[in-house]
Length: 75
Image (cartoon, rainbow, N blue to C red; front, side, top):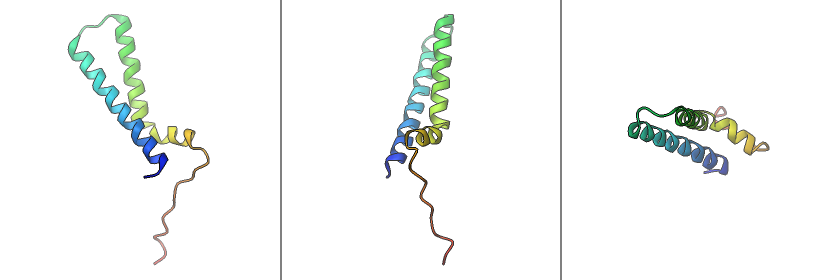
């Protein structure tokens, strides 16, 4: 597994863990104050960005690397 793939996997795992933390926080206190609600929404946005935006973050972290192209077209 390449470092880029490991980094992308780590970002997605952190995103999933953040969503799990967020869901647990909503179950514990269903009616939060305004500040807590804003923090939970920020946590949700960060989690979704880490899950869906992992390829963009990997490109930012590893700008010189290019994706490996498979040479399956030549038989």
